[in-house]
Length: 323
Image (cartoon, rainbow, N blue to C red; front, side):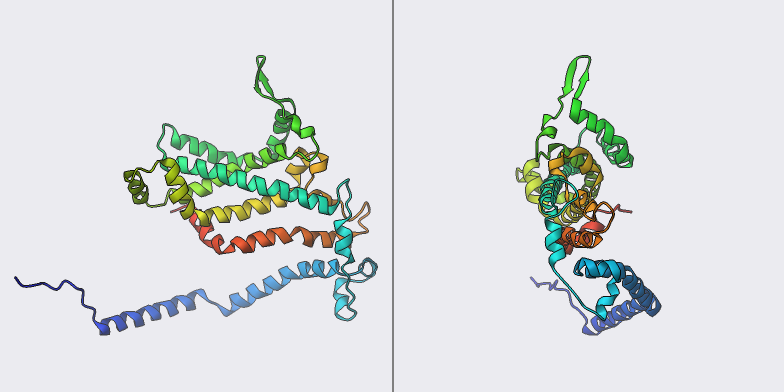
């Protein structure tokens, strides 16, 4: 019986022609999408946008006496720098806390909130994406719609709920959180930030998880895997880009927050932004300390961003709505 050779044959000449055509199309696309004028304008905007940050950075290293009488640009002709602004800023503060104390408080607030929000949202997004149950679509829309509720409208009811609890017809539905009056307690601010973060987190994570191949889930179920194994062994590893992207957003949002933490955190647990807000003094005469405190405050977000930035673009695009 004759053997039929089913190995595909490739024409080298045709392959070269396809390669040339591909390079031609890539060059045409590059020319259409690239403009020297646009590049120059973008660079000019970036430089102008960076100048105030550069001025703030230079001011943070200048002695207070020099900053009070001359502009930051004079360092190019009369350089005079000191590290005392940073040392003074860390041990100063307009409240009972120093900047160093509130720096630790910000870490104690931001890290747990980010973990809580991502954990709850990942579980919720998986349920909406891969667990069929009655009313799933309506409930998902309801969760998504919570994003349009302004945070300012929820602050007073939520503060009342934490302080006095909720009682209906003499039945205690939710007890008040007495921990709010305990020094160095972060329970209420953790809960508040997590509640505000969950709707957007579920929306972003769901959009990614729902696009994962259903064949993976079916194969796992055939092998006897339950929802827990599918979630931890398949969904989470594949969803790391979008999770990392959301971690960046959530961490920066909570780290830079002033409103929510000021309302819900006890005075001993106030975050960095509260102390930084009052670091310049009653009359704003120590704003050089505030410039140093500002750069202290951006160190941690920069570390988080650069540690996770390789996931950022992939996760941001993956979590976007699909057309």
